[in-house]
Image 1 (cartoon, rainbow, N blue to C red):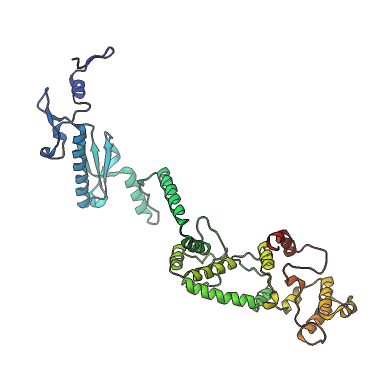
Image 2 (cartoon, rainbow, N blue to C red):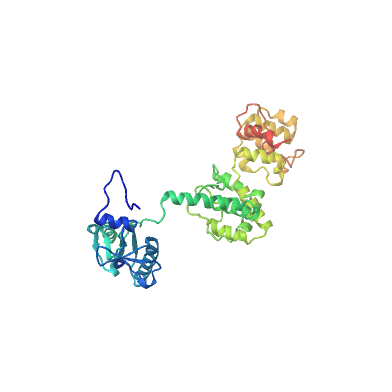
Length: 395
């Protein structure tokens, strides 16, 4: 039988013959960290010397790795900050490291040669780590250089995607939980949810004062207090449940809110959801016009003409149209040339009972859904928006 035959290469000699005979790098018994009595394979005597060698590399590395792991654990128990095991055959560049005591942050590096020899470099700290530590000591406020994480960004992305896929698919079977999660994210926001309460911006202080007398606004405020109590929100700023765009000082913790919601009954969660949806309804939007028409909202339940309304109203032709609705055609025609101020005063007199014969309970066309006007000139946003979405809300 031919042990070695090659038309291109010479037969191995010396060191290479030993490697070939042992199936790769020869592993001498002197490199073992473990007790040879526990080795399950055989030890082969060296035909060329006194040394013995392991005949089964797989069995050797199994025992050697176990011994290395035990050594690492012993170092950690002894108080070393970190034990870093290099790959088999990886070079340890000692010139890049400085001897450093254990209590000063020194680490242990474990170098493993291909022939199984293990070298423990105790009390080592890289010059890069020392430089970063010195810089941090000089500037205590400076953040420390983060250590290299065990996962690469690509690997973290991989795990994130698969974990995300599993969780959201499972969530499909838990509608009640999804409802609560939606409410929590509406209130507190997330990376993908950015809902803000309508700021109810007012152009003048008079308009702000007028809003405080609105019955609907007061009822809404009472419901807000009830919702805040259900959510156990104690923030000093309780003007809105969902923070507004400019409420920089107001933050909500989605996890705290979600945990609170999971303990609430279904009807309470639905109540909170209804409120926050209403609170985030954008003022002056087509959605307001569409919903107002669909819900057949009657503003006479919530609003009545106040002084601010009359102060802001300037169009003489429209004012005369209002006077006709309140006091009748004869009165309106008789004052068609009168100033806007005079005509508004007559309307107010009819409404408060000073003048008899007119309507006391009246609402201008502007307070109807859909909004109507007194002239054909156009240019009113609410009217245009209502027309644009009418087909979606009115059957």
